[in-house]
Amino acid sequence: MPERLVVLYRGNRPPATALIECLADTVYATEEELPYLLPGADALLAWVTITPAIREAWPDNPDKAPRWVHAASAGVDSFLFPALVDDPGVVLTNARGVYDQPTAEYVLGLILALAKDFPGTWEHQRRREWRPRPSDGITGRTVLVWGTGPIGRAIARLLRAVGMRVCGAGRKARTDDPDFGTVHGASTLRSALTEADYVVLAAPLTQGTRGMVDAPVLAAMKPGARLINVGRGGLVDEEALVDHLAAGRLGGAALDVFAQEPLPAESPLWDMPGVLISPHTAGETTSEREALVEVFLDNLTRHLEGRPLRNVVDKRRGYVVDETHPA
Image (tube, rainbow, N blue to C red):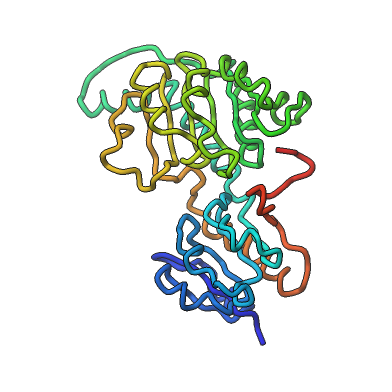
């Protein structure tokens, strides 16, 4: 009997469905259909990943739960519910690697947009106003990248290439990291915050990182520094961020992720000067869908052949552990 695969989708199905269907008995499920189609499946491809549907549809009987779940995303916080995490027979994999370079390019674009005040230029153009003014440079500016996984590393490499001074923040402090040079741990993080012109959040959302950028952390940042979040919205205390932006303590922010998505229309962040908002698109490119399917098809082939899977998530930590580059 072929493996029974459930593909969770919303709107559009993944590309290359014919290839997937050649390898497995494939059933497509919307979020509303998932509770009826997930029990008894051997595997789940979550083409939709930011959703409570998987937790809500997860079978009460572990024998009816899929043995392998693949997330078509880098972040897996929606999958870290007890029934999945606590079952040692369920393997969780993700799309690690797909979003690294696109997100790094997006971060560089955000830094340039903030430094050069492109939003102000576009507003002056809209008003047909000729307003010459100086802008900030980025060469020699200090960036603290909070999150030293593959996306954080890609960000660090690209920002170094344009002349910025980069350091990292992670669980393990070190001074000889190949991409960051210095990685700050808890004991030196506050001093690093006082020196950084930009703080870039690229950490996964876990129990240990939720709300890590709170009022004391924001207060410790260098006056006029800018915050960029391409990780998860839950990393930041948004109310505290609004307060610090309104008080002029920070020079601005570029936010791609939010605690609630879509960002509610009544959020004060929409209208705050110096704030750039994008709809969780930092890693998206025109070739993203094909790259996501390529990673999944490789893992599906490995799964069917009994070979080790790529990108196996440590469900307790909430991310793929890379022993060569500790987080």
